[in-house]
Length: 115
Image (cartoon, rainbow, N blue to C red; front, top):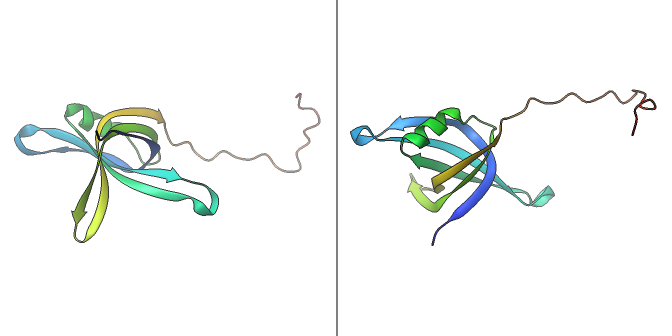
């Protein structure tokens, strides 16, 4: 059985495509982080979801969004490179990319802030 689940960030905006005989699909890349500090690694997945649902979801997915996916893991070779692929069965939208939050100035007096 080949079933995988991942949570990560979208690496490039989703794109909807029409393939032969009017069938549609959605594609995007996804970054999955593993480890932390100096041992942190990023694994890139090429995600594809077939059908109208995949095409519609791809139009909603933007670079930086946090999503969860489940599906079947695979590999493909192209021009001497090996790519990790995921044939997506289900997607969970976990949140949009948020703009950077401004930090409070260091000299701000916090003595009046209740804790």
